[in-house]
Length: 252
Image (tube, rainbow, N blue to C red; front, side, top):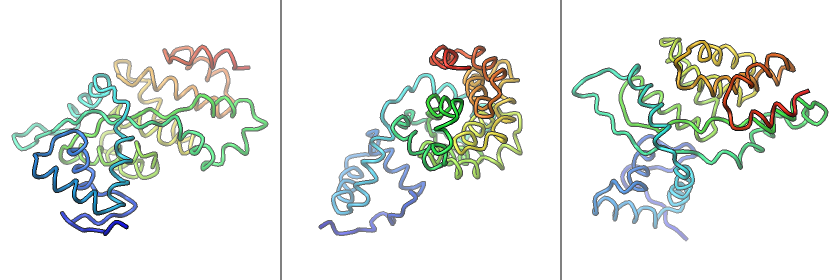
């Protein structure tokens, strides 16, 4: 039986604290010195809940595609983070959640499965919708810090919590395509298609947005859920998504 510990001020709860999140990040990415690493490993050995949380994060950090996603986050910080000698940003390797296995659970929790049995468009949405993997979480300041906190929730599939954290930022920066894109995808993941569409449209309207192609795909899926096949087909055809041909071949 493992004895519980509260060393370093950690108290294990269902929701991980920012402090513990950063500590686990440093540990898994080899950024701790020898003493700190040994101390943290002693904590892991003494606390079964902490050990389980570290194992969860090993999965969370798997499958990174750092080059592409880091570029997206750099664009966000260029607009959102003030330039200052004190504004020190440590960019961590990208954290890509393995979402494929959890899509079925998301569908079940949203109650979509019950209605999709007799609705071919709903079945197609269920088959092809997979939330964007998200961006790397960097430890910054001010608004960027709040964005990153929301990204942790997003990548943990806690989309409602992410929306709550991002809504105040989006009101201050309504034209920010990073916020618009992830707000839209989060709302679509929760089943709120009506609210998702305007956010995704703001990204589509921004011709030079890094997220525009992905926004076209998700907007097409949004209209598919609304049984608006004409708009769904137009948007999906305009995207370069790897599964667009498979989806278009099934649209009636």
